[in-house]
Length: 200
Image 1 (cartoon, rainbow, N blue to C red):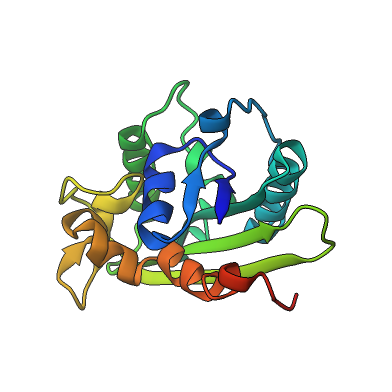
Image 2: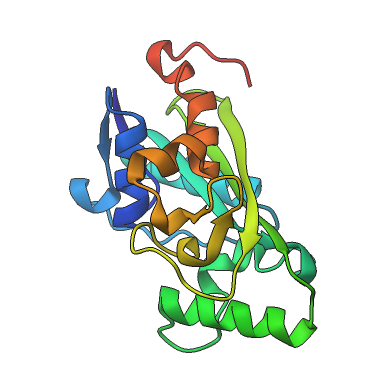
């Protein structure tokens, strides 16, 4: 099946390609689609549905969109849905966002371990159908104050999995996909993408 991913994020698209190798995964730019979608939902699920519906309507293709982010317990769940735009610095990079997050945690004076989780909500929209396939996934861990590893992206270098003694950025792509929030959510939708017979 040809599936449009509701993002032009190359890292995220490659992760999904690796998880769904039997499908042809394309990004909007791959099909010449330019569309800016305002993510004005108040939850990950709302934003995933907004993106999936908008890209499906514009392209006519089965569309998978996700909204995901990091929730840190000592920050009362922040940055949450604002994870990708958490740092107020203009043109902030992933490194800027990691630094800003650590600064905010340290200002709180919270005792370690700094418990956190990645959360992902996925929405799949089939054009011409009035049902949306939804799935969620989480990945529990801790935030650490020093960066470790060169794989992954976003907050991966400071997201530590105690049971593995590694950050997500120290894992191979296959290792990360097997345990990640996005991987856990994709596993739930994958069976329904084969025959399109699903319940809402």
